[in-house]
Length: 446
Ligand code: ASP
Ligand code: MG
Image (tube, rainbow, N blue to C red; front, side):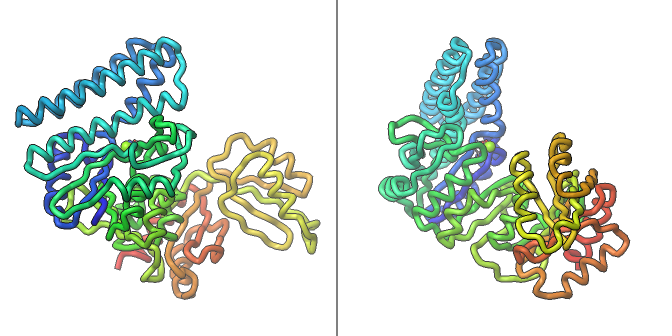
């Protein structure tokens, strides 16, 4: 069996739903389980509605509610088969009535607990899957709609609940029977506590739902269908020559994820990867492309992709007391800990330590606390470039090519070798664009 997960943009309109059903229809022999997100920006809008209601903005929440209701009704209205349309429309109406009741409650008490918020947010996926299922039925696809809340069991940390894996696996195996020739339609994101209360796995949680289901059913593969071609060698807004990476390891994807906006968050696909189920990222608008394959082990070595982060600040502590002293780094890092600042890159010499901080707030307290160790230097407007690839530094040739490409760029810091899949450089922000483009084209454009 295969798990096909479709993100919000892939189910945003009836045309998109038809496009995903084209994909599903061609894959029916593989016993597909379809996991869907909420349509388009529905979840964001539900958040907006709960916040308006909690702030006593009656017009605000009612406007959002009416817009969402109208959009879903329009979509379902495009179903031509009268019986199927009316049944789906009736179910949507019931769900929207519940949303309205919940929002009215939030408005009246002007307070929205995490638990209530999850109840409201859960409707995005529930509404979307009603429509997907109805459209599948209209197209003559054998479709079974189940409720993921009956499958995924969590604790009561609402808004980002923790999955109870043993119970979840048992439920999935008991209730989901993938069959060739039929699609099983499930909601991402939503779950239930042991007391039967609706919970969610946290924003963007549908990938996680899909990988939990893939793992429990030992899927042949899991595919995340989205609106990009896969994971790119670099953000194409910065480097227009960027192209799709065919395959990468889980560790490489994890390194890239740290840089944000990276299509999939590795922690969400961990359950699948742990079971050695390959995960593909594919584009719904261009289904002929293979996308990116992420798997537990790396088959290739060498540079795979670049990422960058800007601005970043470099803090350097110079101190001759560090020479041959023990516990020095520990005392320095204790200060970062006290200020709750997370350090990205560290480089040390015998008499100095440099660290980078991502987009830091006011650092004056930190700098004065660090001054007890020696002279503190602060450099703002720096940028971090990360080259990701398996066994990156095993071949000195790669390192040589990197530095050769950056011959004209002032490099402030280097961190190589701590993870085997990552080489990080710090350059001034105003050289970032030039540096990543040169580097990218040296490493990835033949
Ligand atoms: N609809 C949820 C969200 O937008 C879950 C998801 O899309 O993965 O956060
Ligand atoms: Mg979404």
